Length: 130
Image (cartoon, rainbow, N blue to C red):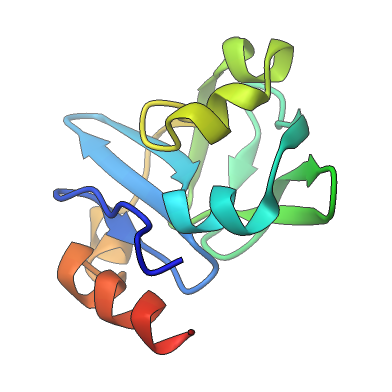
């Protein structure tokens, strides 16, 4: 899976979630590496709007034809929106993991994102997993 795409400008966790900070909002999703490892995604369970998340805490679940896994918040914050497109069509995550964001979070701590991997460190991280 060393051909997995890693998008520049995002921060990554060891569990293969990404976060994109865009002004007052942060968007979470899973990496191309993670969607590839999971295979065909058939179900995504996301939290309710208003839920307060803590960094590294589970915020939902994702299921594929071969596995089910929890989704973990890269940083803490309050869920302000969920991506209803991927709950209706979970295969969108397989098509483009970086445009298929899962939750939009507000009132987050930007300091927490400084502890995450940038794209070059994440590329090395996934290379070392193989």
